[in-house]
Image 1 (cartoon, rainbow, N blue to C red):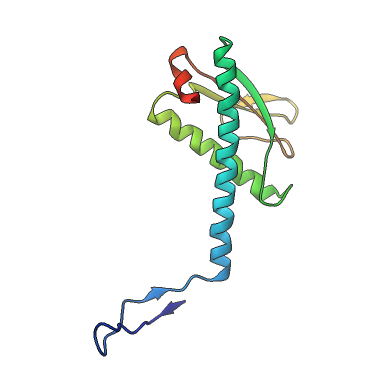
Image 2: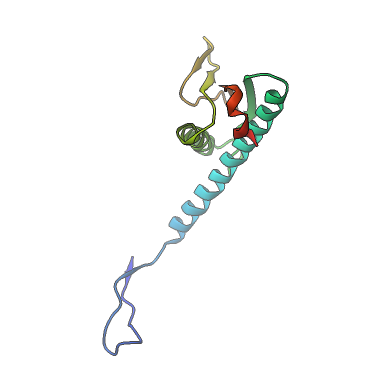
Length: 139
C-alpha cells in the first residue's frame, strides 16, 4: 500500500509516496528478528563451550543442542535458525580468527558429517575445529 501525505511546509505540495507497512510484514520482521536472536544465542553458547575446550588444550569440539524456534517444533523456524547460525559462523570465518572447519551431523542413516547445516528432528550436532591462535574468537 502507498499513501500520499501532504507536506505541511509547502502549501499544496505532496511528499513522496510513503510505504505503509502491513500487519503481516511487521509480524514477518518481528519473527525474523526473534530467530536471529535465537541464532546469536546458539552461537554464543557454542563459543562458550569452545572457550572451555580451548582452555583444556583441545582444538576440536563436537557440540549439540535442541534447535530453538519462535514456535517450538516448527520446522520452518528450526531451518531458519540453522541457516542463520551457519551464515554467522561463515561470516566470522571471513573476518578473522574463527573456526577453521565446520561440520554438521547428518544423523539419518548412514550418519555422516557434512559441510551444510543439518538437523535430525529438533536436534543438531556440529563439530568445529580451530587453531591455537583462534582462541581469542571465543572471548
